[in-house]
Image (cartoon, rainbow, N blue to C red; front, top):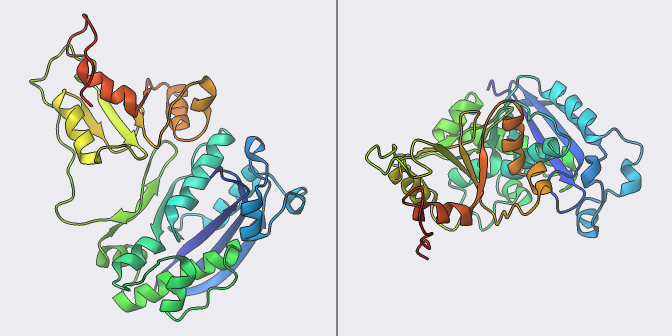
Length: 317
């Protein structure tokens, strides 16, 4: 087996996902765990506090990291170990999201990584489990799980899950494993990201812009990206804006006109746009882009504006 990759895990100090207080890395070379690392770190300054619930999970306290390097230095060290290897994490949406948000808090570029989620892969492997939490998956596959919520043990456990799945699927590398399980690998660059998700025939396709739409509508000829959960199905959101003459995008880039942020984002002060998902638009704009951030409410109001002037028409509920 020629599988070579780096598994990672992070633990956070509080409910803010970017508040990383420890990193774990397990490097797999030619199908074997070759090295394992555990690093404590001080979270980014604006996220540097510890909640009791998090401390209960991982046992790391403020005094444990007081003399440790800050997030920025530790992340650089972790990325140096990872190098050009693809990355694995269990529930990668959390770990990769935590790294993104930590970078946002420290005003850093996101790293460039290709990554797989061992949780998604476990679901696709037909294990038929009641839960796909890391210790449960390890038990089902007959693997040691180490100390859960110790970052290096969890990174190694995720690595061993992927190795076990690759053996079951007779996959020689991470790309083959993802293909055999019908999973799309995730990618993150300095300005955009796509998640590691199930890939299947018949997936919703982004529609093309309706060129016969009202050219005076504020969305006509614009490009619009979505991030986070909104109250309508993503395919319906794409269709909504495409029907008005806009081009829906999977992720924002320097040519994006609008970014719709879900998950209840309100954007009521300038500070709201300096952390979390809105920060991607801030960074792109700082480099010459012109992205306007919209809440879900803003998006639902825009289709009502069928002309460039006149009384406002209330959008249907």
